[in-house]
Length: 114
Image 1: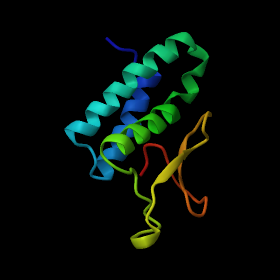
Image 2 (image 1 turned 60 degrees about the vertical axis):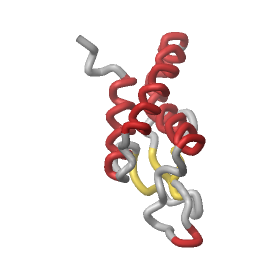
Image 3 (image 1 turned 180 degrees about the vertical axis):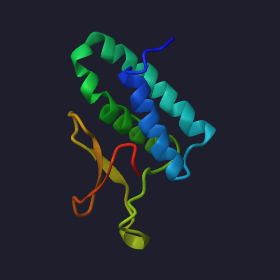
């Protein structure tokens, strides 16, 4: 059985929640999440002390993979129309990642709470 405190499982749950809330939890996006997790597993094995940072890194990796394969995610709920843009994850490498509006720097939600 997998350890429930596994940081990769937590990262998976947080990212999948936000994908689902945004209506972006398609088979393609879920597959991209699984690919990102597989890649980050090796990173985490090489640097176990990076466990507190893994959720934010997974979210960033998924966001990049979606941009290359599907499109922008997640859309900023504060701006639409010609001002539409995606949120981004802060901190780049740190604990307690959160979604931030790219335009005004406003914190929108913690990762997993869109």
